[in-house]
Length: 264
Image 1 (cartoon, rainbow, N blue to C red):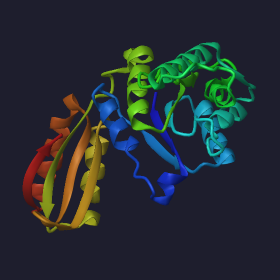
Image 2: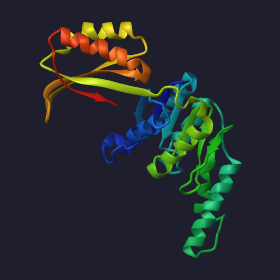
Image 3: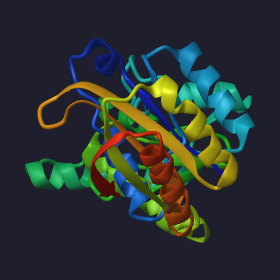
Image 4: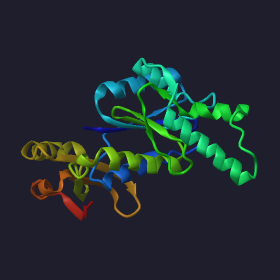
């Protein structure tokens, strides 16, 4: 099962806010021996979100979607998910209870009476309106839940809420996946070489070691190494030594100048 990430928000695409989810989700997954296969950024466009979510449901991947599940006019993810599924939206009973609890907590903190029928409080219940058949994702920060349908999981855009909710989903529903795809990397700095001349060697290493992928990261202005290529292999830890040994031997045979080696 591949793992994907959808990040929703005009503010990300316009640069008004910097995305923090991608790096953190990679970290969360890596801590569990998992890896991110793909990521998509989308603006607050209901049709575009619905199309992306429809692909997520059809593809069978484990997908997290961050953002757009609030109840303001620029929040479209809940409606898009329902459209993608062809299901109606409905107020989830557990979500209703949690949102009412949150409103009671706020009223208590502010020293005000709890008025569930006040228009703004009635509107807040829209945050618990999910596609029919959805399951809730608990929110430890303020109780306002996210929701899941099959292997697609929808959380808020706020990192303080989204990240523990993603961890809860992984640890509650996907324990069996954890540790199965633990990846490692070994690489070496190569000076004075061109990728084109090294490509046959890279292809040979991948052909001889099918579990491993070769990566090549050239740099032209590195502050320490100057112009170089960070050339290496990544894959299951137990398969790396033989593949890296073949890669290194090939580089030496070709007369390449090698620098430091790195293990990640």
